[in-house]
Amino acid sequence: MEASQTKVYSEIGKLQGVILHTPGSEVENMTPGTAERALYSDILSLDVVTKEYKVFKDLLGKLTKTYQVKELLADVLSDSSLRSELISKVCEMEDNVKFPTQRKRLQKRLEELDTKALATALIEGLPLEKNNLTDFVSDERFVLRPLHNFFFTRDASVSVYDKVLICNMANDVRDRESLVMQTIFENHPEVKTTVCNPLSSPDFDKNLNIEGGDVLIARDDILIIGNGTRTSTQGVDYMIEMLKTYNDGKERHIIVQELPSTPESFIHMDMVFTLLDKNKCMTYSPLLLKPSRYRTIHITVQGDKVKIQQKESVIKTLKELGMDLEPVTCGGSDLWHQEREQWHSGANFFAFAPGKIIGYRRNNYTAEELNKHGFEILKAEDVISGKVNVDDYERCLVTLSGSELPRGGGGARCMTMPVRRDAVNW
Image (cartoon, rainbow, N blue to C red; front, top):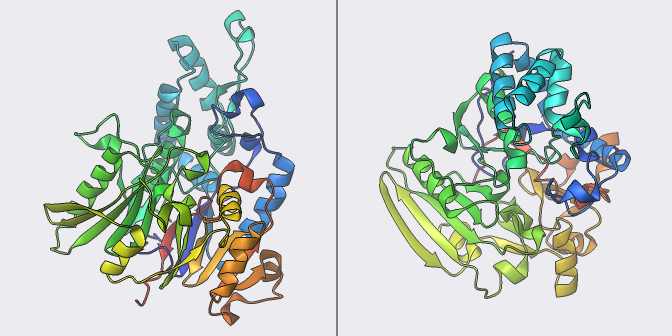
């Protein structure tokens, strides 16, 4: 297999490769009582999720090269030393495996699995065997808990220019996602690249959290980062230090947007702002286009020099940097519709080329706004069947039918982890 280094210098460049994870039993293996621990506000139907996700997967398969997390993981687990190392790390990080005897039993069970079964277990979980009194009376169903959120592949790792940032997640239940992605990016020949992990930093701060949904690449010299419940100020500081490693004299910028802690639909920057085209972006107006108490901060990095100043808004700061973007408003002009559609990822779009995006069909008022701004509305099923060709349109929104997927708390951008995009002719 030919090595494919990661190259992502924008949010909109033509997509050449993307990592997905098709949801499995892990999305259904929760109850109302454990949903909150799994970071869900509701429980999902795997039957419906599977049907909806298949359309999304088939659509991207028609448009670009796709990789599946489970397949990439199984490939690297064929190396016996990597396999042993990963099993040991997984057993060490599981907070519900508290005693050495439990850890040994878990390690033994994982070591007995074949490669594909191990890759599945590391994602879908491993049931607790009730063969002693402690386990029999335990309320736990799994000795290795499922990774309920992994189909949101955006969060645990993010391609930043020619590197991949392994994210230090805000919630421990997602730590294994980051470990899996680091193992893949360090070892799989098709996506092997330079990996940056805050945990490896000698100056690691326990308050440092950063997640991929908060990191947007506006241009090859501009990052937009959300600062909220999932990405801390220390996480942004890590990105400043990362940019310093590009010691080429070039000026680079980070635009930081503070995010509300509630409602939970504001967990990441890409739930309120995404880039659509060279001159268009999707915005949640009440936060980004109107006065609010949430600050916008502009950080300039050039070599070791750092300048930080408060600004009026993300849109105006981008304009000062030469990106004059026309905002399209999530939910249209009515606040009622704006709030409803933002809740179901109405601002969360994924661009597979400049001006060509994917989003949920249910957000009707947002789709109408996009249509007014020159986006032809297409159905994913028609693109998959060949009834319509996205190349025939200058701008288009390809819509996904979604009832269960949006209830998981994310949209098309959340469910994608690009590894390669073409350069944009700005």
